[in-house]
Length: 225
Image 1 (cartoon, helix red, strand yellow):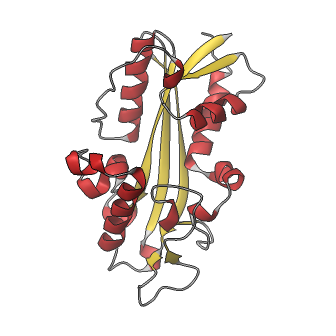
Image 2 (image 1 turned 90 degrees about the horizontal axis):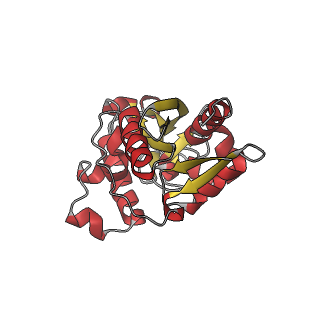
Image 3 (image 1 turned 60 degrees about the vertical axis):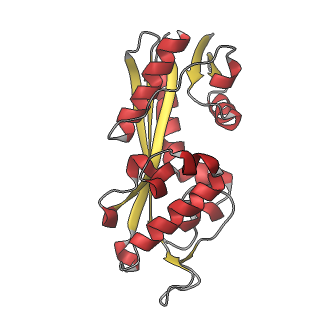
């Protein structure tokens, strides 16, 4: 049986990929399943592909096993593609400084959402188009790239609840089944539900990550390690 390391400490992501690869001859390990500790590579790329590649190559070489890594974020057209690769720390201009480090993930999410909504304040609903993007990269133990995949989840950013033109269907934030920008992301093409209002099965069927994972799995099944 071949083994792939998934570049995450999140046991939920490991379990998800294991389930999706059920019946194959691929065994998935998370970084937390390996006794050794490894230095975290600096994600200083300009694109999602750059950062996913940095992680996949670094951990593949460090572990001596093929490694699968992903990078994802929110792209808003009216903001010229921001927050993009700095989505998780957008409120801090992408820097994980002392202030950001002291906050919980939920607190950082609130700060990020507040900044996005403030920057979109002058834009009409139809101008607030956006998408979540996920890029996955599989690297071999020598650092060579074996496969890449990408998924996109189209929608737009809703209007703040206190906005004078907000309606019940486009006012945000709403929903509790998600994190990051999910509560303000209205899922296309209807733009009625937020990503955080979808149940996990419905979200995985159409989300950027679900698309990227399914594409990557089909490629993995054709590879020999």
